[in-house]
Length: 372
Image (cartoon, rainbow, N blue to C red; front, side, top):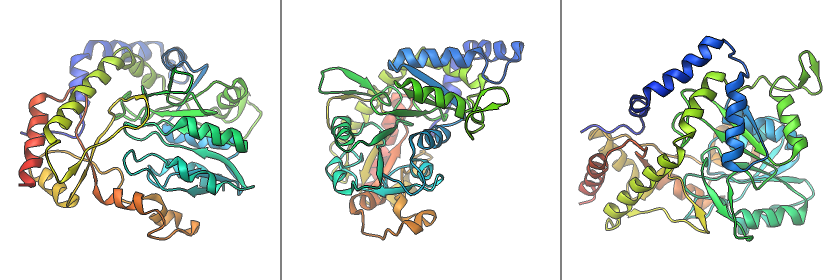
């Protein structure tokens, strides 16, 4: 049996007629740049997340970069964030000559350790950039308390968190990205809501921030050839918006299927002593974007999976403070021991709505065979 880490073909086959009609509708009208499908998707995202504003851009990376620019994460100002994440969560700061200030992660959730944030706040600190990783939102109650106390801006990297919700102190669930000043999503194909190419979205409840984001995505223009800012060329493709609108109709069902797959993994692997399974802290709703395990002899396990034609991924094999591109930040090995240890042990197993029960059984049996 061969099991891909991710495949889009199964979903396309199941909904081929809908996807084809959506794509054909764009081609027939020929409005490929900020067409009506983009506006429709933005409205659908607003309704689903309960954000007041949604602005489609070309990628999750662009969403982070533009939001960082607008929020002033630049010119020597410091932003507190995590070293255990994708490059874009930090490059969005350094691209504007801002300074990322890392704190270590919580070992069980892989999220920013909120108990370590306040000790890093100083007069140069302008913001906090929490990352909602995999299946766990950061502790947004505590983060927003710190931000309010020190008058900091908060940019939620919810690139992997579409559909996640955090139950705040008021007893209500809040969608990832709607709690801070800005939130961002990625529509990279593997995401819970993923397109057939790159795409991203910025969300906010602040009218002025939304106005600026709409200008910034079209070179800073308020109208054609009238520039209020030096902006970007970053627009969500109309074709991608049409595809995403089809997928959004089924998102809750897709999340439910992911949950069943995650429960199967947990049940089948819970008696394997060489593996630690993910935990969730706080009252929140998961989406099971990725199913990670912490594994002894991780690299050898990865080779065993590959030999048995099972796809896997490692998020992330090297934390950002040890990446050569961030050497000038001055961090050394040992500065963030939890992030470093997690990077040596973590491995992601296949999880997507169309994977079969038999395929998951095969993956679990293959893992148990390795640890006999």
